[in-house]
Length: 278
Length: 281
Image 1: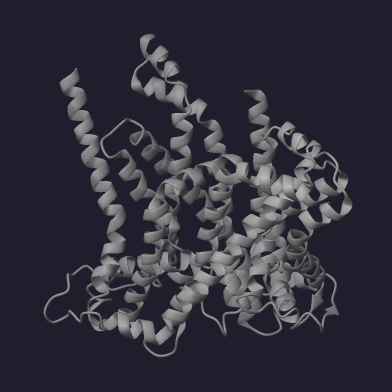
Image 2: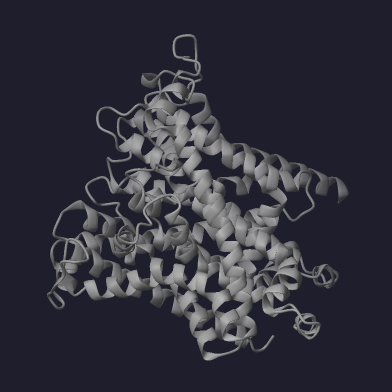
């Protein structure tokens, strides 16, 4: 019985291992092709680079120059970091306030925000980009306001769920001791929200870093984020440069993999927690 | 803190509300109004009644095609993603060597954005198809299954994490009791594991359905609708209507409204269904 179980487990292990290798292979195929000459990619993507096809880092230099990858990386990083900070900071305040103060206005705000999660982006994309244009939000700073607005639904929903599970007595004690609501929130409540704040931050960082359509419509002609830069290379005139494309894909993936490896534990827990609350 | 002075209430809620009103609420109301107008920018709207809605369906078959394509795609990918994710979750909760490493690997594609994902798979799918002298734009079938593969690769790891959390939350005594009572692995799975992870199934179905219907980036990068507009899903079709030709903005907005109602109905139906099932159990 035990021997049979061992065989079964080894078999399953081998199976999962093969599956994992297959799962990662697309990224390795792109990596391999990023070192091949641009004309040797489309026809034989599964061939290793050889003496004839190997071009070193040439694709990387041409890719970085062609689409302006360095500023793109800067814009993506700037927009993601500050939008996520704004979302965590402001929506946690809002969520706590409308959860604790039970009134018609509070529940109206809550349901309106939740409703916005359902509405597809296409419903508002045209009018939103016009409004952003009129209000001069069409720059990397202004877009943070838009991300706060679009991220508010899910973030308030998750924070509210968590606030409900915190005993209110602690806050009431703080009030009796003379804390005003601002002090109560930042000294007492926010530290308790930390685990769920990490979840909210991670979910929003994944969304904003990878978001294409919103920045494309609002700031895309002047400021290219990484997804816009990748799409720009594809949509450009003339024959597309497959070599530069492969290099760009790898460059786009590297920051994500570093982010993932550093914060892996939080990301996986955060996703599970976000889903259960959501 | 059951009551709060008005100035504090405003301080806590206004920053979020202002951002929300500017980015979502005003555009939503304006967008709803504009479905009944012709316009090229928001300032030159002219009232035309229901014309846009009629044109959305009558001008050509693209919107209907996109709807059918999206529904088919959603059905296939929701089923496949959840089956694979659940199977992986079962495999990775057996206390196998390297479980955490495997979870890390399977989740990884989920962090890569839709545009990049699409181009990674475009290389691979075209690399295979070139052996048969065609590429992904040759037939809508290729685009369909290409999209299914891409979304599976992206979403399976995410759903697996949720299923793993669900499976690990089952008290081990229950499984043991079932085994002592003589249940084999299949019976334990069917009668203990599956019923107890139903909440996770509800969440995962909800997430995959919403994601499949709203899919845009992967669609744009993998096929961009080719051949013709045959593989354009609803979101991409609406985008093309807006920005493809001048004079169709109103039609695009009307299509977006129909899309919104469609998605809302599905979400409502799902919520009612899962409520009902929760009450029954």
